[in-house]
Image 1: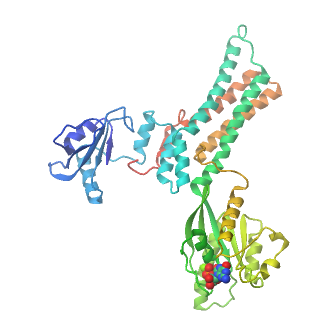
Image 2: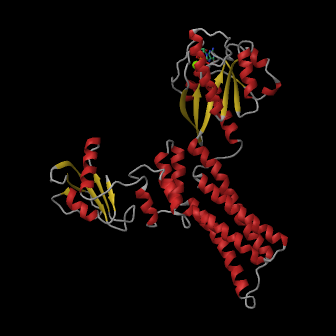
Image 3: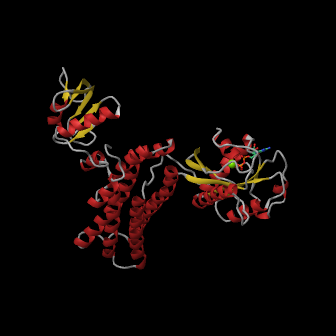
Length: 436
Ligand SMILES: Nc1nc2c(ncn2[C@@H]2O[C@H](COP(=O)(O)OP(=O)(O)O)[C@@H](O)[C@H]2O)c(=O)[nH]1
Ligand SMILES: [Mg+2]
């Protein structure tokens, strides 16, 4: 439980009792007490004096036993002693206001808390180290330099030579390209953070559930020789060298006749969920039984997923390859293999990576933009630079550049928080949970 702000020193006297003096930055054993002095718990107190704390303010941490009841009582004691509950992200917000973090680092804190996956955590940590802010500030400084040169030439036309147009163009184009590169990291960053949803679809009994299990290396989904074993969708997370795939196993999709029996109605509900999973996924992993002639249901799914991002696996190659050999010329890149074969599973992971990444390399250590807000700001700055560059090519007077260049620096300032509005801060810190 932590408390931050001016009243912290007074709070300590009311809620923490120890035989020894509570020194700054020294874990001290004692008792946490309520307003009547009754002991709630024994624990450690840590005091950080301003400005050397996370928030930049006086900050107290009470380390108590993890039972929710104890924590609740400790909170109650602090409230009674004069504290109030923090808003979501308020600690980090105060850290930002005290100049401890820039805004992109504060967002990285939120991502770090949310990061489910190691590579996502690494990317968040890289951003926390200030990579994005450094790059943005570099570009901003470059534009500021150009602005200064322009201002000097406009204010003192007799003493200062007007900057060379070619030189201005080169500098602004450099800044624009740096922003374009930064914008590209947004797409990558989103892959790392949010992952990609992959729906395993196909006719029943094609081996979809077997494939999910093989991909995960664990028996997650029920497999049987009876068609219709999978009724509901099952979702699991798979790390694929650089990004996370959320793999959804679905019930087999087939056309049902008009008059449905009770069992078929249950099946129809399962099929509806499969359809929804397919519609919501980015990538379709289509599984076809290769060992027998292509069924109408299998053909329909292959047909329907053509043109979207997908991987087609003709499965059960150990039993035969009739359907694979009879496949459409469109499906030249389909895979032939078996869910029981490790090489097939490796090839499949490679194919999924290929579909999602193409030949891009994801470097999770590279700082990347972390939010649509940051991406928008970069885009806005880039557009302003494009206008400025156009002005230069058109041969218009160079004092016309200033407006666009100022717009560009303003947009970039929103990323590091130099120009952040109160409303923007509210929106960002609302993402945090209370206590962070
Ligand atoms: N021989 C062989 N059998 C397989 C293969 N993949 C799945 N099966 C079997 O096919 C049946 C249906 O598999 P299942 O994964 O439940 O299919 P689903 O209905 O598409 O989920 C089970 O008996 C599996 O053991 C394979 O590559 N080779
Ligand atoms: Mg299944």
